[in-house]
Image 1: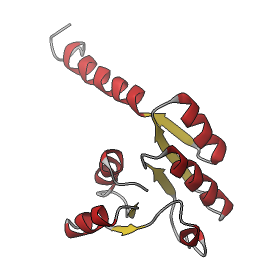
Image 2: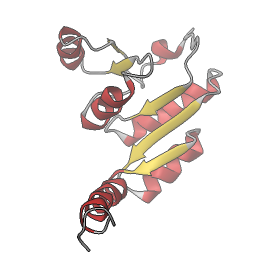
Image 3: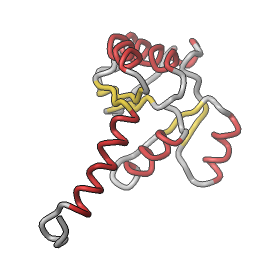
Image 4: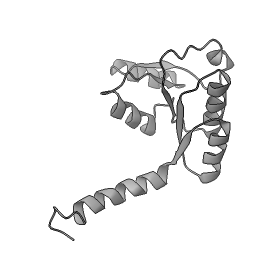
Length: 136
């Protein structure tokens, strides 16, 4: 849920190995993504009607990548209240937000900037400190 930078990155990473469905609350963004072959539909996590009668079928996991923290909290609560037992993961910018999302029902949250820092450090480690690069 949410097809900004984080949602797009997750979608593109997973699409080769899994059947992925994306959702976003911006109709223009949905239309643009559909024109580019992305399996996406319009949905607003804060819309009560959206959650009524939702069938999860074989959905195993939900990634909450919306910008709005309250939307992620609402989505996690609604997912659990409507019977979704799969894995829910979210990104967050701050620890207090992450705690709220977990309390709402998410299994995990990732602090976006912390994860980015670890990713950058991993690239440095591989390029500069790996035994097979000859550098060190």
